[in-house]
Structure formats: structure tokens, C-alpha cells
Image (cartoon, rainbow, N blue to C red):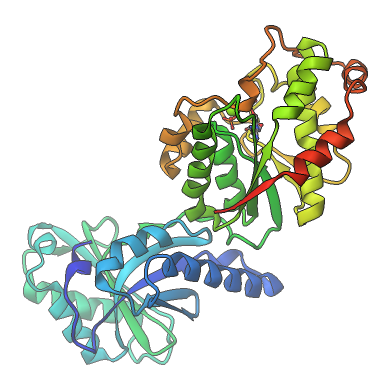
Length: 404
Ligand code: ATP
Ligand code: MG
């Protein structure tokens, strides 16, 4: 955004970030909680970059101001990851006054390389403030004249202009002038749709599951099972790294690190080999359910994907899930193709970390022939050889909570 580089030391021309959200879908009661959650999330996003930055709500928009110019790009990046926002712009804020807007526009467009080399342009005026004396189309034509005075070679093209300049006249008595709109991530503000516990492995799928749940407004926390010393310290660090990578989208959260070593050893020692994975996953689920109860999560989320590996058949999922009594399991990537999941992982920046080659606890004691369609009665017979309640309680008692 070349305009954003313009220095605006003068008081009358304030550089701000204008944030837009999809207000059309908002009705009645939901609106307040949507807007409040969004405000809080924007605040924590911008404060992580610039403690002096401020955000104000102005009908239908948020405005970020009072930041250090040097932080502008990082602030834009953070805001572009806040769910609920549909687009953002670096804008100049001025008093809504006809002459003021005209002279400011003239100032802004002077020596503009993009306008000098373009063939077509358009001025788009939005007049939310009905007290502003000139109607939007008429005012757009007037401002178009200001541009044409400076760049007489340009033609107005209302349908597909090469350059569009937006003039947004808001009800707070201010007008926002900007040239570019950057797409936001959309979705719903995190914190408006409940909270869940995501099972975070070091793989590609579960970080994407975190992102997709957060996108629907869900606050996530995560649990990771490790088998240290069978799995390395790097394997755990990798998961912490992944958690930090989804943090921009999901907000800060607790990562519960649970040692699964003793449980795996017990299963290995006592149960038939083919049942290893099924029993492991059922015990993981039991631990998750207890964590949900203890810390107030409403559901367990996994990165399971139908048909991807032996343990991801409907039968396996049925047998894993059947140990749960009080919470559902959500699988946001269940029906995605691997290519689609990878595309999201790359877009959100977790892919390169996910493919680091550290062992996951699921690959320790991996049976040669895992059961693809485990029969519940037989699984239960094998589980009866273990003192599951004690193993689960011990695992939870020794849990480590990492603040992300
Ligand atoms: P991912 O890419 O997320 O690792 P995957 O395709 O490797 O998934 P599995 O290893 O079968 O599949 O795991 C399926 C899901 O189970 C994971 O997406 C994750 O939600 C959960 N899971 C597996 N291993 C662990 C672990 N060590 N800690 C926490 N959750 C796990
Ligand atoms: Mg995995």
C-alpha cells in the first residue's frame, strides 16, 4: 500500500487502520456479543505489537489509531488474522467537510505513480452520515474531477477500474479515504461460539483443526500426549511451536501436555498387539473428557480425516468415541482431501513445522497389523486387563500446563 508510506505529521490527516466486519448476518441479541468479542480480539491482536495503539468502534467499523508508524505492517498482518473481520485498509481520517475532503484528496493523489500510469479509475463514495450535504454519486463525480484535474489522461470506469479510491463518510463526523482493501479472514469472533479442547499432535491436520474451529468463533485450548523419553524433547517443542503458530488466529490458550509413556507401556505389556492404537486412542479420549469436565470445555476436537490411515475408519472413530459420556467429538477436517488440508496449513503458516521429522507418540510401539475395524467387545476385553481409571487419574495429576 503505497499511500500508507506517506508521512502524515499534520494533525488534520490521521493515518488509521479501518476494519470492516460482516454486519449483515447480525441480528438482535447476537450483535452486542459479536461486537464486544471482536473488539477484545482486535485489542489483544494490536497490543501484542504496539502497546500504545487504540481501537474505537464506529458504527459498522473499527478504527485502529495512535500507533507507531513503524508498526503499521505488523499491525495489518495481525488484524488480517482476526476472525470476524472481512476486510481492512490503511486509511486517512479527516473531518467530514466538503472542502476539506477535496483538498485532502488532492494532496493524497499528488505525485502518485499508480495514478500516473493507470488508464482508468473510480471514486467510490459511501455516505453513512446522511447529514453530509452532498449525495454519494454527486460527490463521487465532484471528487473524480479533482483527480482528473491532476491526471487528465485518466478515464472513469465504474465497473472495472484499475484504481479505486474509496471515500467513506461515517456517522462519527469523520471521513476515511483509502485506496486498497485487504481481505480479512472472515468467520466469527473467537469467543462467541463456546470453547473446546483440541487434540494437538505434531501433524499437519490438527493445527488446521484448531484454525477451523476458531474460524467459527470457538475458543480453543489444546492437549498434547507425549511419550518422553521414547519421543524426543524436540517432538514436544514442535507442538509448542505449532500452538504458537495458530495463536494469531485462535488467541492465547492453555496447552496441556500429558505424559502417555506409562499408559503405552502398560498397554504394550498387557494387551494384544493389534489393539494398541485403538486402546491408546480410547484412553486419550477418556483423559480429554476429564479435562473437559475439570476446565469447562464443551467438546473434544481432533484432526481426524476419514480414510486417511488405518485408524481413521468410521468403525475406529465409533470405538474411540464410544468411551465419551458427556462431550461430543468434532472433526472439522473429516471430509477434506489431504491436498485441501495442506493448502490451509501452508496458508496459516503451520505446514513447515508440521513436516519436521520428529516422532509422535502414536508411532511408538506401533503394531505391525493394527486393527482396521475393531470390535467393541474385544476391545473392552483387552482393556479389562488394565487399571484404566488409575492410569487416567495419574496422567492428569502429572499434567503440565503451558501458557501459549
Ligand atoms: P495429524 O496430522 O493431526 O497428526 P494424523 O493424520 O497424523 O493427524 P493420527 O495420528 O491418526 O492422524 O491422529 C488423528 C488425530 O488424533 C490427530 O489429528 C489429533 O487430533 C489426535 N492425536 C493423535 N496423536 C496425538 C497426540 N500425540 N496428542 C494429541 N492428539 C493426538
Ligand atoms: Mg499424526
